[in-house]
Length: 352
Image (cartoon, rainbow, N blue to C red; front, side, top):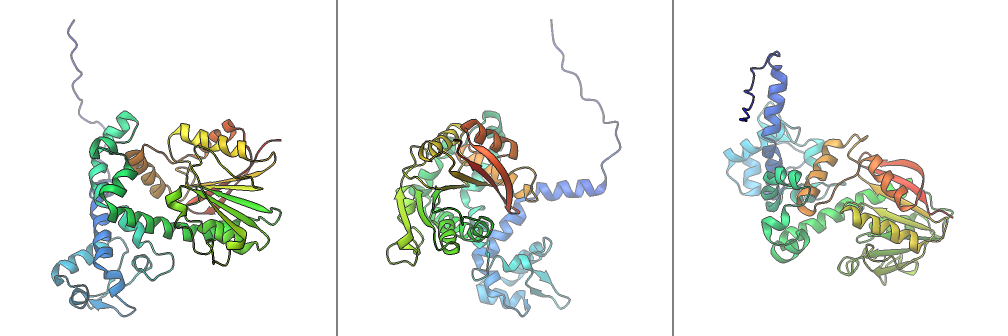
């Protein structure tokens, strides 16, 4: 029997509204604003523009570019609220363009560079392959895993990654310290805590508290100076090299796990199981993650989720998926708190 594919039928619905077509066109050209942000950050335009509006010619002289093409770049960015063009053809800062300066509080300059590094433009077109296979495309594309590639073949990109993660960690550390009340605890362990910015913030807030930072040897070797010998918190801080997916070599009253449960499911299960094995019954476990649902930052977090799929085969969690992982491991969930618009804290205990 011969199977004949059904012929596509002409659409019967009304044509889409012009606004829908325009919005889709903007999304299709989404690489352009990302590239424009990267170009402005790399050229140093946000840093060159001060409080006084400047012409494209003046800015071009400051950053050594061609004035007409710089004006085109700036005009493109103004469409997204990054810089604004005045009636006298000068350009001025906006809240967003100031965030691309190196010297501003909560700067996003390094994040903007990290998310537009050359390798990103290579992996995004392969998203259909990652969706079809359910795993990373990075190994196939570059012949090695993501982090090995960064440190062997893209060291500039690795440095940008480190700066971006440091900036992000410092910013979120303030919010975590403001949220968490550890007045009843004597010890806290930051598991996979990077350079220890969050731990340092908690120790500064709670002068009675002692803390331990656990992360890979190469990471903790560059720990926050406040935690190292000679630092103001060194007397209350211990830095321990280790892989939380293998074992957690510390007992504490409170365990903090922030933005590390993004690997494959088995690694997440092992990490949570290792926490329970290390902790005393009744110990508090605070898990902090970006969510891809029930969040005002879904456009941002879902984009990170897809990038994680592409580069390491990982995933951001929904609220339900993270609760399932925690309860599956045996943790008892007590509360879910908003750290900031991008992060939620899941407050748990180890069962008795």
